[in-house]
Image (cartoon, rainbow, N blue to C red; front, side):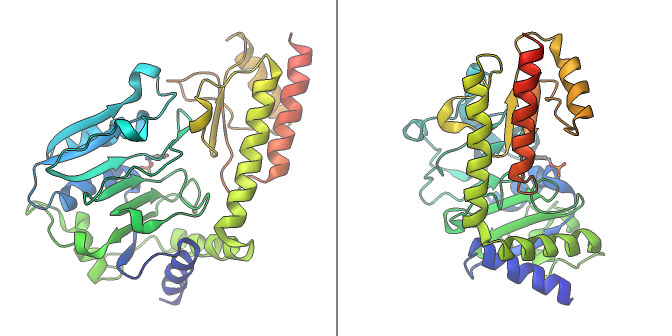
Length: 314
Ligand SMILES: *Cc1c(COP(=O)(O)O)cnc(C)c1O
C-alpha cells in the first residue's frame, strides 16, 4: 500500500497533476485503452473524433469503430506519416464525445509540436512513448494513457490519468475490468495489480525527481535528439524522412543509402554494443529509440559508430 501511495504521489508531483484528475495503475497495456476509452468516454454520445498520424492511431481507430461512429478529422497517411496536421486545419465534430490522438507515433517517429485545442470536447492522448519526456500541462486533457514499458517501467503496467467528471458513465456492456469507475473506487486494486511493475515504476518516478524532474529530462532529451538529427542531416548519407518541426524526441528512424547495407549496419552495430536498432518493418531502415533511460553517452556512441560506418561503406 505504501509503494502504491508513494508512486502516485511522485507521479502527481512530476506532472503537476491537478487534484480533479484520478491516476489509475492498470493492466492490459495501451492496447486495452483503445477499447476502454470508447467504452467509458462515449457517455451517451455516438461519435468520437480521431486524428490518424501513424500506426498506433490507426489501431486505436480500428478498435473504437466497434463502439461508435469514428470521424477521422485528419489523416497524414498521404505523407506516409511524416507530418502532423496543421493546428488550424483541425475541424472537430460538434457532437464528438472526445477527440483521440497519438502525440508521439513510436514507429514513424512523428511527434506533435503542439497540443490540439478541442475547446470543451475532452482530449484523449495515447502517450505511451512520450509521457515523462518533458513537462506537460495535464489540464489540457480529458484523459492520458500510457503503457509503461517505454518511459515508465516494466511492461504489464498501464498508467491512466483521467479527469474525474468523465468517469462513471461506461457503456452497460462494459466488463468490470474495463470500467474506470471500478478501478478508481478500489484504488487500482480491484484485482491483483502488477505489484512488481508498479514498484519499479515508483522507483523510476523517484529517480526522475532526483534528477530534477521533467524540466531536466526535457533538456537532456532535446539535446540527445538534436545531436542525432543533426548528425543524420549533416551526413549526406543517412536520412530521416520526418518534417523537421514534428520530429520525435524519443524515436528516431533513419535509412541508409542502400537497403543491402541494413544487415551489415545491424551486425556491426551489435558488435559495438549498439542493439535494437532495426526499424519497424512498415518503415524499414533503422530506428533509434532514445527514451529517458538512454543516457546522452549512448546517443553519442551511436553517432560515432554511424560516422565510422559511413566512412567504411561509401
Ligand atoms: C507501444 C505503444 C502502444 C502499445 O502498447 P501495449 O502496452 O503493448 O499495448 C500503443 N501506443 C503507442 C503510442 C505505443 O508506443
